Image (cartoon, rainbow, N blue to C red; front, side, top):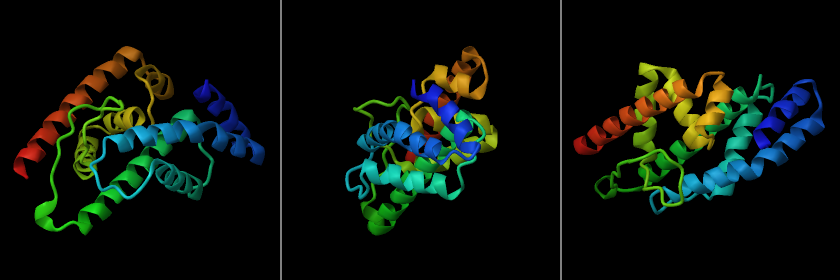
Amino acid sequence: MVRDDVSRLLESARDGDRSAFDSLIALVYQELRQIATSLMSGQMNGRTMQPTAIVNEAWMRLNAGGHAWENKAHFFGAAARAMRQVLTEEARRRSCQKRAGQAKRVTFHDLAIAAETPAVDMLALDEALTALGEVDERFVRLIELRYFAGCTLEEVAEIAGRSLASIKRDWAYARAWLFERLQNMSCSH
């Protein structure tokens, strides 16, 4: 499995093996591109970036910070944050280009990755995630790993070193919290 090989490659890369870093890129690139494709399928029309550009931009951000990730949890968390930042910045650019009255706010109903994902207002999602981080940062990490990095609940539990039952409770809470927050945001706009 990709995520198991990631740990081995991260360790080798940390020890200075450049070929391990190159192998890491090759190993996770297609998976990250599939996640970006899924994320973009839920975006509003008018987007300017394609999934490949999102992955490339996220990868440049990851690489710019160095590649001394401690473990796969650290790596996938960094990848998730980078993809979130890229998508949020792209949404901000699009929003600035629109005239004020033409922007349409769309609610975010679920965080399950699927081809039929409803349109996501990335700016509202980012604002809600920032507010959720004030409640507890671990909920934000969970959402980032699930939504932006495409991890299953089992993978999140393994990455976080926590029980699956605990992750499921956190997932239920975080989804409900975000749903309510996004509902309230869409009603006030």
